[in-house]
Length: 196
Image (cartoon, rainbow, N blue to C red):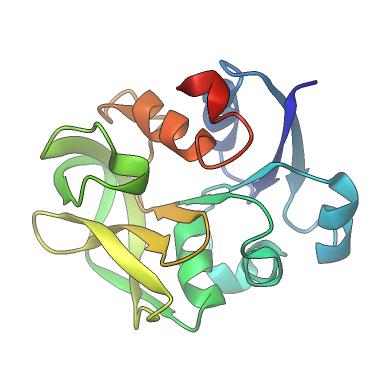
């Protein structure tokens, strides 16, 4: 029986591309708009993984995204992409601010700690960025484990639970090693053995 991936769609055109990436793995994928289900509905879905998608707005307009992360931390692996990472940061008391320079369809070199999502990813590597907001006031529950060469946080990971956030877009053809990042996320849950 395939593992279950629940995708929280924040009305973003990139969500479909992310879902297509995950279709390469043995997953039963369900996609729900962020304002079309309750936090309680998530438990009824019984997911093995959750993906919180990018979106054009801010965490305050991302439906259940932030509360879902807060409520279910540690129950199943969660990956937040772009807006999803900002929601993850706010779930632990952080804030979202305007990025020093808006980045839409631009690439950046990223340096990382080689752990979690970045195991086996070369140093540095190139990512695609589509954002005008950035995280700030990062909680001690989270650590920044990747930054752009201009110092903007590009990834966070919870210090205890399998919660991961990336500010960039792993599904973009401009991002190197996107499938490695996805597989490292899936290794944090029931597909670990299948991906060894």
